[in-house]
Image (cartoon, rainbow, N blue to C red; front, side, top):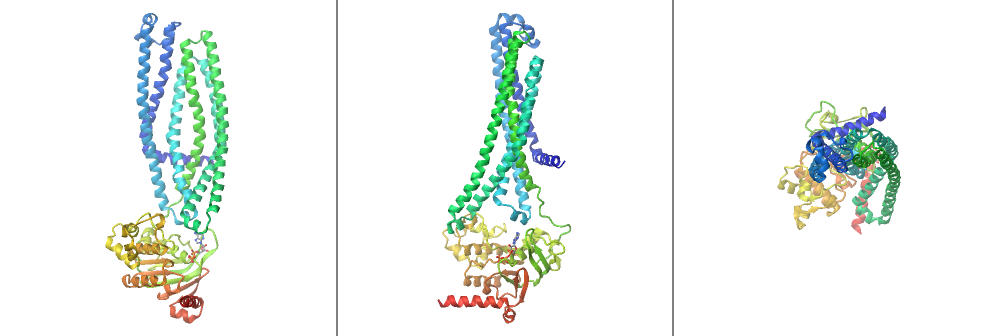
Length: 607
Ligand SMILES: Nc1ncnc2c1ncn2[C@@H]1O[C@H](COP(=O)(O)OP(=O)(O)OP(=O)(O)O)[C@@H](O)[C@H]1O
């Protein structure tokens, strides 16, 4: 039952993508049927010619031929008949060429529009999937599902599905002709078909799982390559080349091993298939000879029969191959459906777009990720509008999680407290709108491949160059950019590898500033800049971005000591909260960290 439901789901998915390109596909199929009809006429022309020239039994020559060429002409002028037969074959060949051309053109157009539609929808859907889904799934694997698996499905639709229809039409059409010529020998020929089809069916059920394993192994291999390439700096810095090589070799070996196994399996299939086909052709020829000798078949009919039978042998066998390859497509369809079936991020009904320049309140927030222990425990605090609120805490204490919750990368489940902005629960605020109002610079800034100007202006398509420049000035990266030969047009490579860590962070800060959002979050995003530049950036921000609510996450006390309020987070719970002066007087964690950092600073200064 469940299995049937799954199959129906797969078929429905394919049909959904197929629907817009169905007219193109059907036109391709029409031309393909025309090829079959043309090819079916050729053995008939040969049959009539042979029977006419040998003149053994003219009663079997169709009446429409006799209306065209009298029995006398056939007997006395075989040359004329052969010329007409040759012209007929040339005409059929010409029609065949044209039909072949158009069947391929329409099939290609249909398949491209099919695969384009599928890629578009996949990409669009992935953009709307929750952040938690992206965290859970490996990028390499997702890429493979969107490329290799889509290609397998394209192959399935263009080469396999279309081919199945073409072959079924061919078999039915040829069988009608063969049965009209001689029922007994046709039955002998056809009696082999169930064996071939059952054999293919058995193979089909055996091979699906191996194809799935091979596909998964390819996904793992892609992930290893992708990780290695994106983490190339770490690999080099830690001299992990040989370790990475070994890791790749292991996965590559497994992948190759699975394909070798599949190759063996397929070879066995083909060999046994060859044997069955050979026996079938031999049987039909032997029986045909006996029937001809007994006078039940004319020589022309025998030749035509053998020709039809041989022409059908390959398509029937291809049916087996196609069915076996269809099992592979089934796996790929499942892998694509895994993405498409995932629920997109959505809002609950009645969401609004209130002003965001209001107090942000975390009220008794408790949170844990899908896997793992509680990350935030009864966290309550208020970020007053227009003020700077700093968060300090050890690694893994839940600082970034607070930010993830605030811009709704994760939604707070019911009964786990509340986060409000201006008194409105953020789950009642339109998600896209909320994110557009909260600017964020992440710990590891991501830069797109493109110029610095594009990277800074990317969040606001309308941003003028003056805005971009101003943002870069505030982020203290303007003079560094000017020192590059191409200035703002400097291309930063994939993930900005041509910039230093601090420069990347500052470009990312400028990108956020261009947005002019009422709330700005700096998630440990000043860690790669020196203390002096850090102070300059904060000073510039204070002057030019007055009235903006700023949430500052940092490990360096000097970065956050001037904030209006500082919260110290320890193991997911609020340990201390207050201004710098209050916390210093409190002699708690904050004071301890302050003393350690200041002493370290003094030691460093005295060296
Ligand atoms: N997507 C996730 N799924 C499961 N656990 C997660 C996820 N993200 C973070 N965690 C866990 O939640 C805890 C808090 O992580 P978080 O990133 O909020 O800490 P942090 O205080 O920002 O740390 P750091 O200062 O190192 O950035 C950690 O134990 C972390 O392992």
